[in-house]
Length: 333
Ligand code: ACO
Image 1 (cartoon, protein in one colour):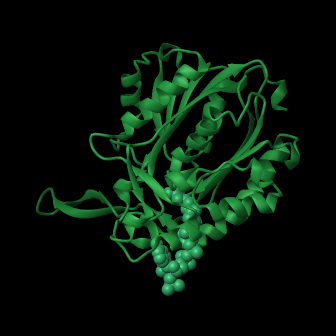
Image 2 (image 1 turned 135 degrees about the vertical axis):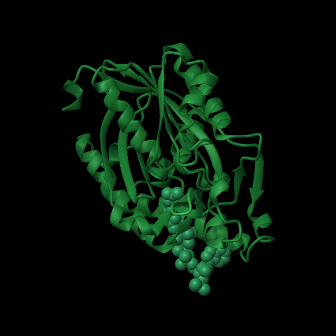
């Protein structure tokens, strides 16, 4: 169906950036009761990169975006739309406009999109709609998060999991449609399993009116439930996206899942019968970078020469919401 549409989509360039400070598992054993052995066997994570001031989400996202723009062979002036998928903007009003200014992408409209660890996937499909309808030709999609700001570093159930980073891609209008299929899902009834919830302390406006003063609780997660959800729902949604794409699983060249946990990646690949050599993983180096994890893994694999033009990629994001989704696309024009 999609191939009949005039305005196809191609993902023509990628970029990524991580902050310079590494934190190895061993260091975490000085903060909380944990061990390198527990973290590596339960999650596959060995280290993560943390953004320290003056590093910021805007800086990481801008670095990743510049690389993606260069790789796509366009200039910032060509960009019509900047979509920033993030749950951790530098500014609660959104950080996409700051990135637009840093890039000098004067023509582009820019806004943030929040869907936690599914953010890149949801952003990909959102960007695709603007291109399919013929409204925009060149879209910069960024997935970036600094979850280290929102982690309770005394909570061993979460502090070992997350890291910071940014990844970006350029989507362009193309004669043939390279976004072959997708499926997006949400289930708000499971929201309590994973959140970064608003917490209001009170401030007095008048003697009778007390309004909440904004602050947020640190990340809270029921790891077991989220694990169970991911291992069940991710294979299902990839199957659905494959069905939309009229493809069978053996046509997949690369599987790039949200990098939350190596055990989830392995379990999903097993359920889909996708062999290890087709599975891309960098969770050992970066931990869970939320909306950044998929474009970061994609960009590394492209730069390492693993992913080549025309390769078919199955990708899936999942996380808070709860939200999850999958897309099947062919790399490059
Ligand atoms: N070090 C040592 N022990 C620990 C640690 C730690 N860092 N964390 C938990 N434990 C303990 C627990 O307290 C528990 O002890 P108990 O049996 O005495 O109660 C034991 O280890 C087992 O805990 P579980 O939570 O059952 O461990 P599990 O094997 O499920 O692994 C993990 C936990 C890694 C969090 C896993 O459940 C997971 O990866 N879940 C999915 C997370 C995810 O995918 N999130 C994605 C979205 S993130 C987003 O959207 C922002």
